[in-house]
Image 1 (spheres, rainbow, N blue to C red):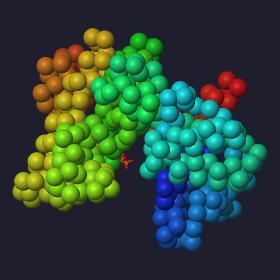
Image 2: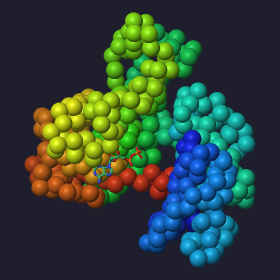
Image 3: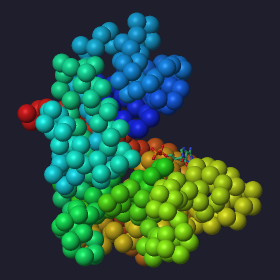
Image 4: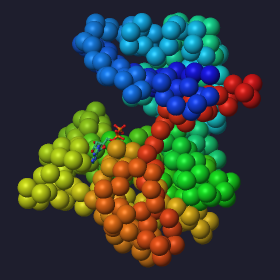
Length: 399
Ligand code: ADP
């Protein structure tokens, strides 16, 4: 069975065709700059990457080009569209009602629109992708996977903010949590890798990429997380601030004359590694600048790693007294031994001891803790697309 995984952003679509019988990717691609000056990237597995500049005014045109490249006579990976048996769509915010993946019906699509105010940057783009795919691939089931579903088992005390209760009851403000597919995947893989029982497995997983989430999981379900109602809180990220004293936000508006829009622009796009360093949101640029003696870059890295360490400590208290593994994943978590090492310094008090030799240069699935560490530390490359494809197949089998 071949599943086409579709992850739509406001001006981009990531796609990947996965053969679920062999559990392998046949090819993947990225459509960028939709509505600006389109670019299509496509790479068959083990084949040459092709990049084309195209006129891509909307998501439907972009997806049409994606399907064309997948079925291309010379560089394609399948002969025709009938070899795509299902589509799996990423929907960032599914509200409290969506506790697992679902087959998308016209009624449900309308229901999803209700969640747009909860994720205004992400959800409209996800829905554009679904609509385009349903037109271009009408004969197959389309399954939605929700980032937020991983945390649907969070207790009321974990997801309720200590605000006037009306904020929750009347206005719907609560913690949801994000990067669910990534945390679900690395938790499953970590249990498999360690030969542990996934139904009795307690972890802290750190998704550290452009966005950062630290999640506490019991038996493969999120019980608490550093991200909240939106996607800006928790640890600092590439350009997002992470937690800020709300008084600062209030003062920026009431004392310093910032508009709400300007504050939003600052906390989402001009903060985090970029904001502190004044150099870049990319950790590789920050590490290079530190080598060149830049003090602000060093400060940015110290704040970044200190904050993630604090979340690991805080969230470990949600694991009912036992932590089996600490997992690093995503662009930075998988690739930067410096960041992993800095995060772990100070966690020895929780029985977390890194082996610097194992950590050094590690970029693949591996245990990087010392033999006397009470908690296994692992690097597990994430694969959100595979997780979505697995969820789609499971959903179809259950129906
Ligand atoms: P996104 O959240 O945008 O999907 P990724 O998980 O792809 O992000 O992570 C992007 C970040 O990963 C980049 O900003 C970069 O800092 C970091 N990164 C990628 N490759 C490397 C590498 N080889 N060494 C260190 N950091 C890396």
